[in-house]
Amino acid sequence: MNTENFYGKEESTDRVMLLENGYFSGLVRMQMIQEARHTIDIAYFSIGKGRSSDLLMGALFEAADRGIRIRVLLDGISHGLKGKRKNVLYALAFHNNIELKYYEPFTIFKPWTWHNRLHDKIIVVDGQLGIIGGRNIGDKYLASQPDKNFVYDRDVLIYNTKQESHSVILSMEKYVEKLWTHPYTRKAFQKLKKTKQFRGLSGKKLLIDQYEKAKKANEPFVHPYIVWRESTMPTRKVSFITNPIQRINKSPFIWKTFIKLSQQAEKSIVVQSPYIVPTKEMERYIDKRVKPKVQRIILTNSITSTPNAMAFSAYLGVKNHVIKAGSKLYEYQKPIQFTGNLLFMISV
Image 1 (tube, rainbow, N blue to C red):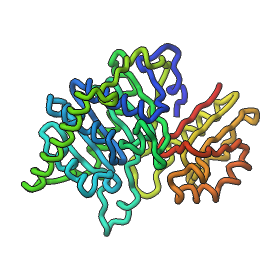
Image 2 (cartoon, helix red, strand yellow; image 1 turned 30 degrees about the vertical axis):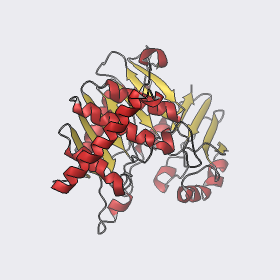
Image 3 (cartoon, helix red, strand yellow; image 1 turned 180 degrees about the vertical axis):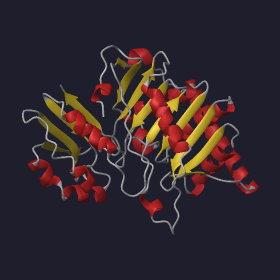
Image 4 (cartoon, rainbow, N blue to C red; image 1 turned 120 degrees about the vertical axis):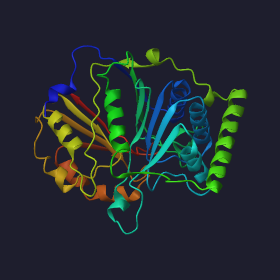
C-alpha cells in the first residue's frame, strides 16, 4: 500500500463541508436534488418516516419528472419503507426515469443474507456533488426540532469544483456502480401488478403535492440557498476507502489502511467511531505499534448515548483492552449519538 497516495501538495479540485447540523444536512440534500441536471445516485441503509423524508422524496420525483436519471439502492431488509410507505417503493419502481434495487434481499433459508447489510449513506449528483456520512433520510436525522429519538450524527459534502476526473466524487460513483451491478444486488420488483402501479402513482402524487404546497408556503426546507464554493473549504487530497464487498467475515481493508497511516503519525491520532468492536482479524494488526510519543485519542458512544445496545455490549468486552493498548478513550454522553460515520485523523 502506497500511503503517499493519501497526501497532496497542491489544492485539489475537491472542496468539502462538514455537516454537523442534521437539519442543515437535509437542506444540502434538498438543494443537490433540486439542482440536478443529469443523474442522481443514492445508496442508503434506510429512508425513514417524517416530513423531511416526504419532502425530499417529493423533490426526487419532481427531478425524475423533469428528466433526471435516478438510481436508488436500498438495504434489502432495513430500508424503512414498509406498511403504507410501500407506496413510495412502488412509485420509485414504476417511474420511467428511476431504477430501484435492493442490496442483499432477505431470504430466510440463506443465513448470510440476515447479516450482510448495506450501511452506506451516499448520494452523488452529476459527478459534481456528493454526501457521505452517518445520516439516513428521515426526521430522526434531519428534523428542525429534534425529538427524544433524534440521532445526532455527521456527514461530509464534497464539491468537485472543476468536475475533473481525478476528483474523489468519481471514486464514489465507481463504488456505487460496483454495488449496483454486484451479484448481491437485486431488482426490487421484477414486475408490478396493476394494483401496485396504482398505489405507486397515488403515493407519488401525495408526495409531489406536499412538496409543491411546501414551496408555495415558502417552507425553508424546500428553499435552501447554499453557495457551494463559498460554503466549502479547499483540500489538498480527499480519499474514499471501502472494504471489499463480502459476506460473513469481511477483510478489514479500511482498518489496515488506518494502521498503515498511523505508523507515519508524529504528533497525534484521533479516531471517532460509533462503536469500537475490533474483530480477531482486526486485532492481528493492532500490535503494529505507532511511535511511543504519538498521542492516541478515541471518541465513541457511552451507554447513555448509543442507539444500538447490542453493538455497545460487544464494545464493553474490549473496552479495557483498548485502554491498556495506550489510547485515551472518551465516551460521549447525551444528547449526541454517533451512528454510522467514522472520523480518522493523523497529525504528522
